[in-house]
Length: 122
Image (cartoon, rainbow, N blue to C red):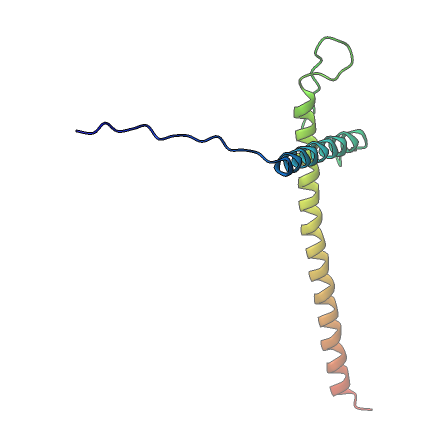
């Protein structure tokens, strides 16, 4: 009988170029996260809800230090983000409706002109 030998695990050697690439990838992730946080913070600062009826309640829980930036701020940003996303969706639907309306009006006007030309030959 032969004993089964455990497989040998070789450690992977990381070259300096791979280290540099990893550092650059981490820096890109950090920069992207910073930009996302800054964008959310700016949107939150200049956010004006459309109406009280469409706005979900936004609560900021205080963490006790009096600055108002507590645990609830993440939920606040998420609800603002959801509201902005729904506003964007409603804007798209409204734009499509307006385009359809103007297309129908122009089609109707064109058929009216064609009928006038048939009835009143010049």
